[in-house]
Structure formats: C-alpha cells, structure tokens
Amino acid sequence: MAAVGGVVETLQANPAVVIGVVLGVAGVVLIRKFCDGGVCRSTARLDGKTVVITGANTGIGKETARDIAKRGARVILACRDLTKAEAAAAEIRQDTGNGNVVVEKLNLASLDSVREFAAKVNAGESRLDILINNAGIMTCPQWKTEDGFEMQFGTNHLGHFLLTNLLLDKLKKSAPSRVVNVSSSAHAGGHIHFDDINLEKSYGPIKAYCQSKLANVLFTKELDRKLKGTGMTTYSLHPGCIHTELQRNLDDAYDWLYFLLKPLFLVSLHLLGKTPQQGAQTTIHCAVSEGLETSSGLYFMDCAPKEPIPEAKDEEVAKKLWELSEKMVGLK
Image (tube, rainbow, N blue to C red; front, side, top):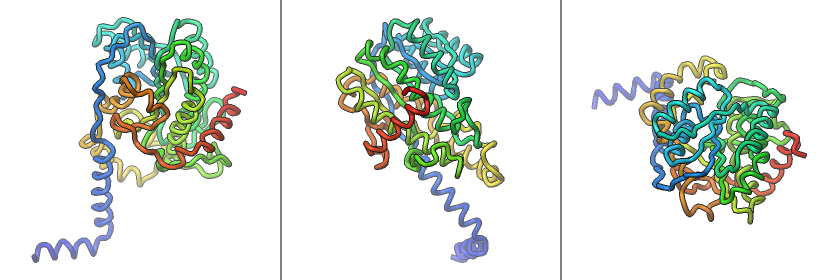
C-alpha cells in the first residue's frame, strides 16, 4: 500500500507524467481498435482483365499490385517515381510469375500529368476492369500542387477525381468493372470547407488530410449515384494504421511537440499496426470479392461495410463537392 501511495504522490506532483500515461493508454486502445482484423478470402482469378493502381510502388499499393498480379491480371503501376516503380514492378513480376506488370508515369499533383496518363490508357488499353485510387499524401506542410490547389486535397481527391472521370468510358465498356478509393478513418475528423477549400485562411496538416479523406468517401457516394445502371460499382475504405512512406512528411509539418511524441508513435505503429500486406486486404476485397454489387457506394473497414460519419453520407454535400471538383479540374 505504501508503494501504491508513493506512485500516486509522484503522479500528483508530476501532471505531465499523468498526461503521458493517459495519452499512451489511449493511443494503444485506438491503434488496436483501428488495426485489427480483415482478410480478403476471395480466390477470384483476374485472367484477361486490366487493373490500374495508383501509388503502387510502395506500401499497401505495392502489396495490392502483388496480389492482383498473382490473380493473373494485367497490372499497370501508375506512379510518380518511375525508378521506384520499375523496381517494384520487377519484384512483382519475379514474385508472381506474371510478366504483364507495367509502369506508367502519373503525378496526381499535376492535372496535365493526369490527362496524359488517362489519354495513354484510353488509347493503348483494350479494356480497364478495375481502377484502384490508392496513392496519397499525408499531413504535409502548406504545399501547393502544380495547379495551385492545397496539396492534400489536390492529390488525394482532385487528382483521382479527374483520373476516374477521364477513364469512365473505358471502365463502362469493360463492365462489370469497379472503382476502389482508398480513404481513411481520418475522414471522421474532416469537414468540407466550401468557403475555403484550399484552407488558405486556416491551414493545418491534419485538418487538410481529414478533409481530403472525407472527400474520398463523398466522391465514392456520388460516383455510385451517377453509375446506376452502367454495370460499374465503386467502394471507399479505411486500410488500417500502417507504418509506410505515407508518414514521410510528418517531420516537415510539425514542430517540437511532434518530435517528442514521434518515437512513441512509430513504436506503436510497429508493434500494433498492420503490415502493408495486412493493410492491403480491404482494398483487395473491394476490388475482387464476388457479391459486392449491392454494397456499391459504401465505406469499408476490415473487409466489411462500416458506417462513415453523417457528413460522408450527405447527398447534398456529395453533389456540391462533385460540382466544385468539376470546376476546379476543368471538366466543365
């Protein structure tokens, strides 16, 4: 009892320790909550089908490409860094025995690059069965895309929005086909700031990331509404908490507080987070599993439908975001 009393006195005298303990316990609980479970059980083959995966040179994109290649599909790795992409493609070809894994240049932070990539696919590919919008950037400083958009909204949402629309005719002709949008549970902290979409008045790295991930879910919902009767289906998802290159911009975006918490954050990810292979499971499930037609437009987590936040289901917000996105990327 004396020992317990001593601990209590120490904690009372050092509130920072209490805060650290609380944050540590809360972090473990949250990471476990969002990292457990979810395995794609489908054995579906994809022979004769073509799949485009953005950001497939690393992390869950690379593991998704590996799985899709094992199923026999022609896989197009759409990547900004061609050196890393060629290395990833060579590894996947070696690992799967599928020689039909190719690389194409795509920089989602450049609308011109998106148009060039889409034009090449439309002209050179006889079909497109699955589009997996996987690439993303997370919690970077207040950067701008080539076209002047806030970097996270521009890359994570607008780049994929334009890409999907430019490839829609090819996808429709290849129906039944699918569009899979990799979002995040971070959408729950998001809000679409229509009065300041580029967050020029009030920027925050997490605020921007959450807005972009909410945009992914809303885009999926409105795309599903527009695709009714076409034979196409679409899904958004949270892959889980995974230690990948997605966290590479954290050092640039945060101050001394982040550097104090970074070791705990990274250790927690390593010990409790998913591996890239585990993190790819929900993406793969949405891309290949049979019987998901009635779940089109839904948000998934751990290979099962999951309720997103109310704003993510708001049809008026989804329509308004679609119309704004059309104007921003020049579709109208």
